[in-house]
View (cartoon, helix red, strand yellow):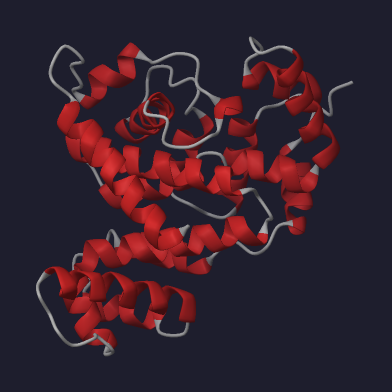
Length: 279
C-alpha cells in the first residue's frame, strides 16, 4: 500500500535531514539587490573554511592562467580575481554539495545535480533570465528524492527494486506506487518550507511535466535534466525524464534544427570543470 503522504508529514520528517544551508537563501536574497557587491558576499563566506578553500582554488587557477607567479592568499584579491558570478556559483555549489554529503547520498546523485544545475544555468543564458537562480534550481531539482532516501529508506529501496525489475517503468509511476506522491511534489513541499522563491518551488514541482502555463525557470530545469541525461554527464539513469516538452523548448527559444554544438560543449566543459573542484 502506498504511503499517501501529506505536506505536514513531509515537513515533520524533514527533521531527519540536516539544516538547509542558510547561506543559499542569503545569496538568493542578494540577487534582487542592485547594490550587492563582492564585499557584501565576503561576510557570507569568511566563516566557512570549505567555501573559502574553494574560492582560493578558483582564484589560484585564474592567476595561473593569467601567468600569475605568486599564490593568492588574500580573500579580497581572490574575490577580485574570480568576480561576483563565480563567487555565487562557488557558494551555492559548495553549500549544496555539503548538504548532499551530510545527507549521505551517493556520488552519482551529486554529479547528476551538478550536471542539471550547469545545464539549467546555460539554458537561462539562452532564455535571458537569472543564471544564478537557474543554477540553484538545477542543483535542488531532485531534493525530493534525497528526502525519500533519508526519511523513508525502505520505500525508496522498493522504488529502485521496482525499476530494476521493469526497465520500462517510469520513475514517477514507481514513486507514486510506493509513496502515493513523487519526488517532484515532495521537493516542492520542502522548498516552500525552506522559504525559497516561488518560481523555484514551481520549477522543482514540474521539472518532469512542465505543462503550460509555465515560466522560463521551470522550462529550463526540465530541458536541463533532459540534456544532462542525453549528454551522459552523470550516472543517474533511474530518474531519466522520458520526454522533452516542445512548449518548454519554445519558451526558451530553442531550435533543435540549428547547430547546438556550442551549447552542448559549454555544458560538458563546465560540468567537467566543476567536477574537478568539487568532486
